[in-house]
Image (cartoon, rainbow, N blue to C red; front, side, top):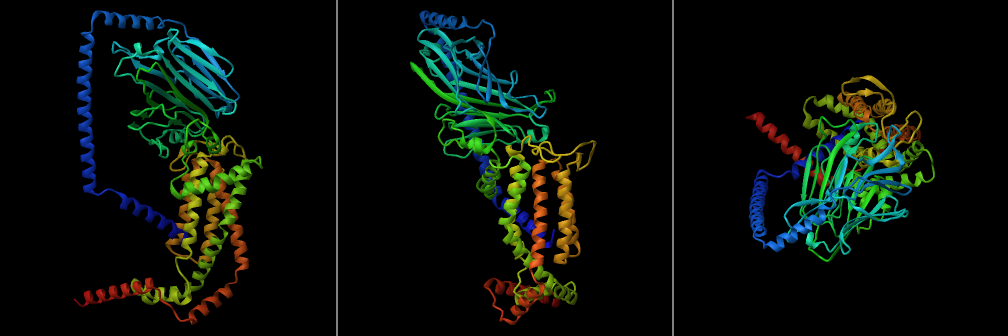
Length: 615
């Protein structure tokens, strides 16, 4: 790693640090924000107190209801109570991609198996597991008592190869129906229809919204639990907004005052989602907790969503929902017709913010998908993708090499200036700038090509850990390119880990060789030389746990760079560069406004230093 590379990384760090400092709220803004939060909390408390008083008034009203209405309420309650006793019956609905299991207790979906995929231990891949997944509707009856769909046993009202419907029927024209439908054209989608007919007598007036509660403890599917925990999260979409992800590292809770388009329980490579165009009302509550110490070894973390569907006592209320149970694969999500306008399901995948996401969506994924349709080996696809990217970046590599070569040619003169002025940094810098100006060389011209390559570097860093295309794809000695390759050590080494990743070792060795060759080209000495060797060793520990597809890409990238550097060195004539520098020195120097301001600033600084010495 040469000086320009180190400067490039340093500039990136300074830009990010400056951005966070610039956008951080001032103490006054923090005080105003705290005041707003306190005001909101006060209003919410007052609202809760008012609702409590209203509820008490309604309770008193019910107690004062005439005897005939009380008897009517009692009769309605007894009609529903007739469905509280029954026997669990498990029913199955399936297509080529999904196998769904339901229970007549609640008419609810208990488990989801993905037929085409296996866990890392080659067992069946259950996205939602019976006993770890709970779905149900809750409403309030006219007595003010909360009822849940799982309090009752539902009858099967329709059953075909692709449709399963459950009813809670108290009369021919008074029932609630839950209808599940699969489609071969949308194999990962389950259409879920809730139809409420003539049920107003069984639902409390004035507080009649139906609440859908969904809680699931997602299960380990891959070999490395660390990455599953890191990438398991709740993602949701509000109308006219891009999808939002709850924090993935800590416990989180979100109260949403606007209607939702969808909410997803996302794992590293698979997603369970429910959505609707217009039937999820406001006041949704989403929460994510860290798993307890008593949790099973395969438990990742508990996720829950509380959603509301408006019900105003209509004679007939029909609501359309849609589930997605499938891979968190960009192209699959992009092509899935969920039945929701502007669903943007592919945005579930965290591909990086800003330019990094644009590079992944606009370049990396289209090229990868195109090659995936032609070539069977994922490792070869990564290699070809590397060749394509490095070919596109070749002009920048060439420009960086020329700049480094010119700086190497001027190095003897730069060293002489440094020796001449000793510790006087101002005079040294001033003469260096004069030398660069006469020679027509910019010390930063080698940094900017490196900076322009960084978006690709970081985009790949984001892409590979979430690329479904790598999952369980073998290459060379790696059995799964989405996981680290190599054997376990049987013990843990601080900073490094308890296993060896061979692709990471190859990447580190090739980076050290590349750094050594660059040091020879640039003639860098001193601390810069040792920093260049230190950073690859740091990456050895950092990337040891990462997907082997990522470190394979970095290794191939280094090897391609070696080839490019070799060709450039053979085609670039140092004597011609000497001649260009000599010719530039003979031309009259033109000062830019920036250079003039820099020189004036240096002169002013020197004058201040002289005045301080005189005093």
